[in-house]
Length: 295
Image (cartoon, rainbow, N blue to C red; front, side):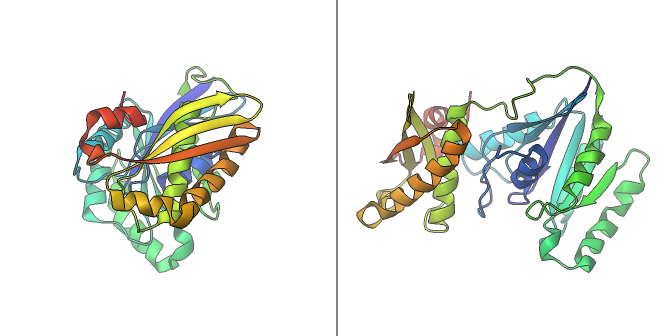
């Protein structure tokens, strides 16, 4: 039996969650067009007959502006420690910055094997990808440099099998840390809350900033899976937008989330959503903990 732990790191909105979901083959981490969608470190598990790869999705690396941001950056630091491999994900559409080069150089100082995935190759020209590869070449040429670089498209599932195969080089003699039928370390309650938040981010788009959280108040696992949850926002004006005219927006969020959660739990789901205002909740440790982002 062989196993390995691999951390996924990179800038906000580079596609870390999309890559994790493709590698695992299940919806492990939520995805939205907004940067900083992932707020917690989330493990996704790939099981084989004689191996187990445990991936950790992390929040995008950015400068903290509040207590929630600081917690997110702590998650990145913790996820990058004591791992067998680090996969740095670069957004091909944005190119690679000096800041990202420094992240890779920092990762190379440790004992973990370092890989790079150049994501979103489906929306750029080959010359753009080649330019990124040229910039990374000096780091690949070093004796203890980048192990491999993979141009991929998580959206279109391009080269994802090659990426997974390359990451298997991190496998070492070990044990199966998670049961074969588990593909994430997060409890169902957390996944449900994140699913609701994903739909809110999707449908609200730029109308509401990142000050939206979801607190799952109650789950009744009867014949019909019943859920009560609060959508937390920071202003009364945001509350009105989330509810929408005659409740149209919150109904849309609920209907979309219900479809995903029904696939997750394998039965009919009933959701009741409430919208509550908690001013400056992202700087309130108690609210952050209640929503599930800190233990």
